[in-house]
Image 1: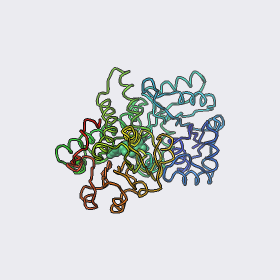
Image 2: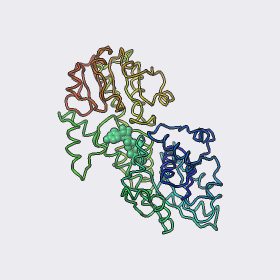
Image 3: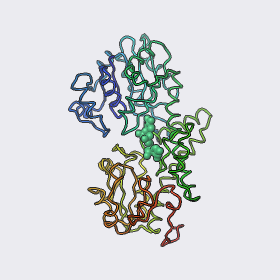
Image 4: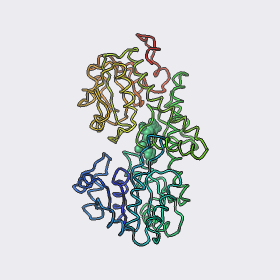
Length: 451
Ligand code: UDX
């Protein structure tokens, strides 16, 4: 099939590279000329495992090309994917459709013959109808279909998620469009991936509902972890205990510093707004979002408590800055709220992240960025593990302890355990790990002053 993809960001690029790898002929398009030039040179603007290799391979084999212009690739294509950003509008948190609708107008002008316009961007329910209307206004005579095909890609695992999806969701209103989509995804049928056809509005809703459910699951286990701390239970054991129940499922039950990233916080806000607009308030989702915001700040207080209540002038080491491992993405990362709150309390921050430090420099001031984990902890009053990079899973804890001013380990991802940390001579604070998460040493000031 001949496919054009509008928007060569994270989703567009992953989709383009994977579809080319399936054997389709793909043109990835972006307005940003410098981005297209780098892609043509084989440089990938984002960090995503395997993406660079996949782009190069398919570019060399001639199935994947890049362009700044819409007209030729679109007029040639049997399917045009819209994969541009839908950032949150500052006034109300709803998804801003400016980029989507601009792209659709450009596409509409260039379409020739029956073409399927596939909306991959995350858009409020009903956007497919708007897209259809916009195209009809520009080209009343044209034969086309508008399809919703949301993505469920996790950063850091996007290629695997694309090639081995749990399901592919396609909201299409006509048979011809369904056939085109089935042909595009045919290589995945070998992996037995279910291709779900449904109404377009259902597909649009599926994306929001999936993200809201996953985010709520995380908010839920984080709340359970707070209770575990007070009640003397271990959330790791509890998560295991409930996760094996197939009705619950073991994924997304890791307690931690709260969810971040480019999707969950933004999509939750958009869904909340959409629900309000429809007069069907999404109270559970509103609560999950609010609880998560509070949680990020609570993690800074946890670190301050571990330091005895005062961090002014003291050095705190942060291991991990990105919102999760295997990405350089800092968007909505808990590290941002935590570091900002610690700095407000007067702490000096040293930080190390295996991949995210360039991006971190753009959003965090007055941080000393370090060479590696050991450099980072040198002279620190406490070390906080904020992102569970593999590189932090097997640290030499004895060495870490001897480099630090005080042996405070605040493990916000529970990658170590109280016993292991204890053996290495640390005072350990995990998340939801019974007494090991309660700071039991005497604070130097009343905790009320900690905030
Ligand atoms: C998410 C969805 O998983 C994906 O389907 C959608 O298309 C985009 O949003 P992503 O943001 O890349 O993907 O990351 P994900 O792995 O889902 O993690 C999101 C956040 O939740 C991270 O901050 C992560 O640390 C946190 N998380 C995840 C937990 O705190 N606990 C968990 O058990 C799982």
